[in-house]
Image 1: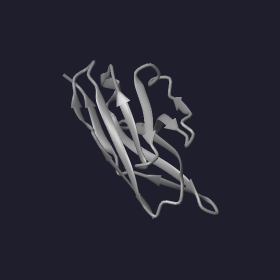
Image 2: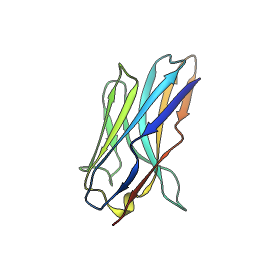
Image 3: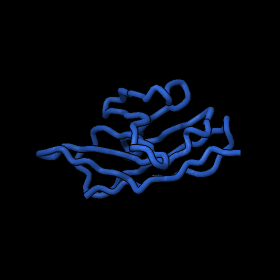
Image 4: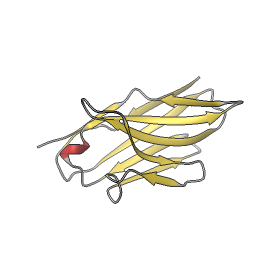
Length: 118
């Protein structure tokens, strides 16, 4: 079983920055993709950014140019550097990872709240 633990959320003013971290631990076989999703109140969970094991990245249009996803494979950790934050970025941010061990397994963190407000 794999556990994902997020940290770094909080309250920030519009235009500010935050860095989220997510560390994977447990019975790791080989993490493939790592990603960040967010879910605002009353809305569906949406992909923010994803990074593959080879470092390839994909971003939601709303995140392009403002957010940067990165990972440290030696630490099984993924980061999300968020800049130029907007009130509409307010949401719970969830870490995601998958790995293949005879079949694909999906893992989710417990979520960390990001609030962008004056």
